[in-house]
Each structure stands twice: as structure tokens, then as C-alpha cells.
Amino acid sequence: MGRLLEHYSKQLFKEMGIAVPSFEVATSEDQAQEAARRIGKPVVIKALVPVGKRGKAGAIKFADTPQEAALRAGELLGMTVQHFPVEKVLVEEKLDVAQEWYLSITYDKNKQLPVIIASTRGGVDVEELSRSYPAEMVIHQVDPFEGLPGFRAREIWADLGVGGKLLGAAGALLSKLYATFDRYDAYLLEVNPLVVTTGGELVAAAAVMSVDDSAMYRQPRLADMVQLGSERAWRPLTELEKKMVKVNESDPYRGTARYTEMPGGDIGFMCGGGGGSLLCFDTLVSLGGRPANYSEVGGNPPEAKVYGLTKGILSKPGVKGLFVAHNITNNTQVDVLARGIIRALKDLNIDPVTFPVVVREAGVNDAVARELFTAAGVEYYGDEVTLTEACARMVVRMKEVYGEGGRP
Image (cartoon, rainbow, N blue to C red; front, top):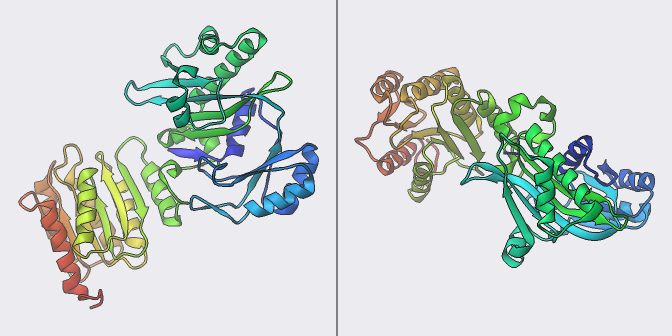
């Protein structure tokens, strides 16, 4: 999934007719001061980073004057929030709050349907809301073929005790939020809090938006707004990880090729099968190996995707070997993996004799893959060897070529 920073989310909300506070983006104290002056009201200063719980991290501050806005922005710029450096801040008007509600739309993974979660108690984490105030929540699954009729949107709020003019406004806002969710292939939309102002208006005071990165091919508008893969990241993506995201997205219909760069390491790691990948990674480490990355490949990726992933894995400085393994593939064609890997090795002028490459694959077309790998000089094993034994062989090969200390 790919996450949008809050100012992009609010920009889209505004275009869809959802009220948001007046806001500007600043990258310096001076810009924050000028933004606050133009807004002309007390402001909220928020760190623009793709993480939640910014308030608890001290990444949301308040200012009554433009001068104070500059000071607060200076405190945020340059700080790190959950490993993400703050390079810009959101400066937005501070609302006159009468009530704080909660509203989100995401997917119910079990029923595979969009699900709306609404409450008239907002400003708290949804986990706390569901744990402490379950009776004050409405959870409603949406039939994607029917969509969300206006009467259904109003029913959700009516079930929470909302009435009068506010009921009509709340129903209209929910309808617009669902339309945004549907139009932009969102995976998550969260408004927390959804503020009822002292003037009786409904305003999305805080916005979280994540989209399905597999649908980006039909969302060119979002290309510069979304950092693909960011929803899975616990820190900013490295430049190499960004390149590998593009490799994975090059063919959105077939196969996955995910890459996470690890600090240091000298073994390029290219495995698949979820539990099998974790087993191999942990086994390499326990035997003294040093994986340079964690990578998942599967779902029958085309040769071009395998080639791109292999080149990316081997391009990291310090990588001096390659380990490739699955347990037994049920749909991934092992011969296609072989062609992509061998092509990358040849393009990079890598000799498997002096650069350890150990492959342990079994499954679809593995006999053809064995012939291809063997002809290319790659050490290949099938299911006559366990994953653990293959890991041990990789560590031995690294020591044979580079010695105990990692040097020949």
C-alpha cells in the first residue's frame, strides 16, 4: 500500500467537496510564519510524515501568532518521528471545536468488503475506541455493487443518535468520503477527528489516506502524491528500495518482487514463500551469514521482473554472493526464475565460480531450471536438499571464496 501525506489527502478531500481547514505547507520557519499570517487565525503545526500517532510523538503543535508559528515549526523541522525525518510541516487553521467524531473506511479482510467505522466519540485511537466504547461505534459493510446510497449514509449516523440538520450534513459528508475511497482505489481513509465546529459545520480536521499501489496504473493523478510501498515501511525507503518498488510495479498483474534493504551484509537474499523466506533468513544469520537484504519473490513473476529484482539485489555495495530459494513452488515457474537470474548475472559479468551463487528451488519446471542453472555454472539444488542445508551451503561457499573474515 502507498500512503499520502496529510496535505495531499486534504487536497483530494477538498476537491470532493469535503470541508477541511485552511492550510499551507512550509519547509522553513519563515514560510510557516508567512502561512500563519495569511491564514489569519491561530494555527496548528503538524509534521508531515507518513505515520500515525503524531500527537503522542510531540509532532503536532499549536500557535496563536505567526511569530509563535515560526518557533513551533522550527521545533518540528529536523526532528525525527518514528525514524522519519521531518522536512516539511502543515500549517492549518485551528478550529473552534464543539465535538470530535471518528470516521473511517477501509476493507474487511475476512468478508472482502469495504467497511465503514463511525463514532460520535473521536480524537482517540480507534483501538481505544473499540476497546472502551464499543457501544458508541457503528460498523457497516458496503456492497461495492450497490455503493453507499444517501439514505444508508444517514442511517449510520442516525444509529449514533445524530439528528436534525447535522444528520443531513453528516450523511452527505460520508457519501462524499465513500466516493473518494472508490474513485482513488483507496485502502484506508480515516478522519480523526471529524470536527463539529461551534458554528455547526463538519470539518475533516485530520486525514489519513492510503491507496492500493497495485491500482496505481489507473491513478496517474496520484503518481507524485503516493510513495509506493510506504505503508509497509517503518522508515523512509532507501533509493534502492524505491527502484525495486518500480520493478515490482512494472507488471502489476503478475508476480511480486519485494525488497527491503538491510544495514551492511554481503549475501544477496532472494527467496519466496513467506514462512520459507523467514526460515532461510534466520538460518543464514544463525550460521554466521550476513544477508544484505530481505526479498520476497513469488506469484509467478515474468522474467523481466525477476531480472530487475536480481540486478537490484546485486547492485547494493558490498554484496558478494547470492542465495535464491523456495520450498516447493505451486505456481511460480522455476525455469522463468532461472532465465531472469542468469540474465542478470551475465549482464553484471558475474562468474558463479568466484562469486558464490547457491540456488535451491523445487516446483513447476524445476527440471528445466536445473539444466539452465547448471549450464550457467550456478550451484543448484532441488528438493533432495532441505532449505536449512541450502543455507548452510551458502555460508560455506562464502567462507570458501572469501575466508572466515569475508576476504579472499
